[in-house]
Length: 284
Figure 1 (spheres, helix red, strand yellow):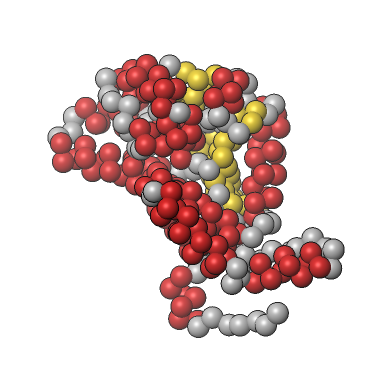
Figure 2 (cartoon, helix red, strand yellow):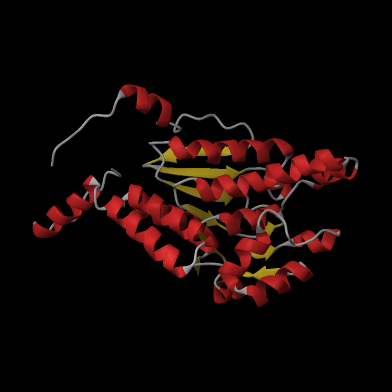
């Protein structure tokens, strides 16, 4: 297989290294191509603030160009995932704002979901304990969700006098669990237990609490060792095809798959198969 070089100017504008990123409002660690984002306000069940919303939005946006991050694990500290927006640091101030500033806030929170869906890395949410409000949205916006029997997922917006249409919930949640079940959760704000969440398809599977993060890292590591360029194409098509007819989707997939057939990873897989070896993917 022939090797080729990329123009340094193109690399400079489109490749980043994020392993050394210094997070300000959560924990960030990269090991073996797997990034772990830990929401770490355990004493309050890991609520979000204006600052953490913005930093998460910007970080997921920058992951588009990160060459050293192949998959992401999203987890909360202290036995809970995320309790949503901080009541004192977000909800209280919002009551005092006028429409332009409120729209600025809701667009910012929605942008977090957009960047999570737009980054090419698969995101694995490791959900234990409380997963409420914006926390439930972040779990929903992830590509896969591992839960525990004791997890409690609640789209609480109705309980605080707001509509269930928050941060893409009315678009994404029905696609995960069905229209009727999504309607129930969004209209009532009730908690979805772990076993019920697995049965409904919200969780890919349940783990013991002590094994949750290990299992999430194992899944993310398997993804990081795979054909990551092709995985990014899969994520893109899963998202974009929501707005396509079947005919449009089939044509879009034909073009996407032809592009993947040009990759070195596709060639590596073929030669490894012929040699009866396991392919060593490199993401190009």
